[in-house]
Image (cartoon, rainbow, N blue to C red; front, side, top):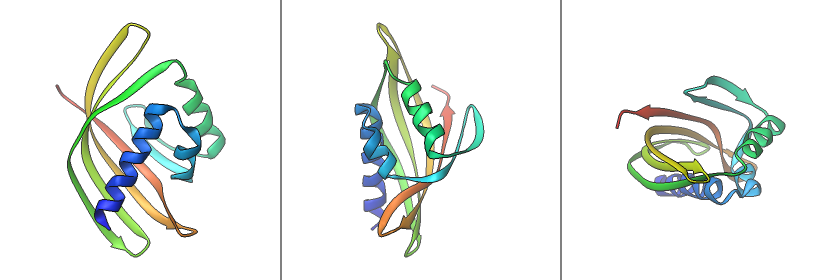
Length: 124
């Protein structure tokens, strides 16, 4: 089951790469909590859609996910942490970075959904 949570996380990132909002939406609990370099916020579905759409024209590529640790907390909650290497940019400008990520997944209506996600940029 712990591998299932990591596979869901990978599916989420793949949907972000391919700009597949419907998959991202189906894997997200709303409101979700997001924490990163822009601070901490609770995000409802309409705000999440605006955030997603604001990335139109920029590309995101997952280069690697490693050092994953996950734990099933109960039959309806799980946590996962991992390192991710990303390449992102628009047009001819590319950059890359590495983050430590954590996510909390909960069972909702028979499906796992992400209720909280954090990203901490790591020094290169």
